[in-house]
Image (tube, rainbow, N blue to C red):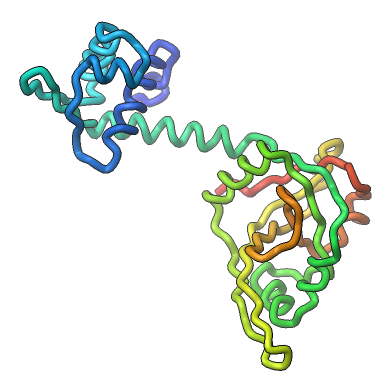
Amino acid sequence: MNTNKEISQDNYANWFALYHLCQNIGSQKAIHINSTEFGKILELSQQTASRRINNLEEIGWIQRKIIGKEQVIRITKKGAEAILAMYKNLKQILEEILIVGEVTEGMGEGGYYVRIPGYLAQFQEKLGFKPYYGTLNIQLSDLNKELLEEILKNQIPVRIEGFEDDKLGRTYGAVECFNCSVSRLDNQDIKVDSAILKIKRTHHKKNIVEVLAKAYLRDELKLKNGVRLRIEFTKK
């Protein structure tokens, strides 16, 4: 199958129709629907919706069986491959979008937790470096935070296990770490290997990301509050 040819400008309307069919079929094997109902989903006329279904059948993305006034439509293997190809393209686009945030003042919370032996030993063993006793706080916009969350769904985290401190009678929760690199937006030649910490219990304000590194990032990248940074992830 020549996927690139099928993801063409001439086929956008068919892609849109296939996407909505898949969305409405969900986990079912097929869907009972007529062209009037499909037109409402696409916000098109019944005639145009009917042409879309005919086009999808002609190019082999769907199979259909007419039952009375309805038709039973199922996605073919070729149609599923077409959806997968679009997913891969969109995933690549998403991964290449810049995640940018601004350096902001922290509360010293990161430094406190990094020093705790139960965390520090795991950071050193599982991340491969002894971290600086503190984290860099990066403030993201709502859009950049949403993009980051989507990207993290496709990353494999390094899990730092939770533990109990018998002396203090306190429990410390698990932390997920995501390997990344951080660089100044105005000088991306210098990239520092780092890790984003995903902590469930935190007192930070909305959209704050904590970054851990071997070096003291404020010195390493000559950072002041307000400097814009880029967060990147290694492609797999």
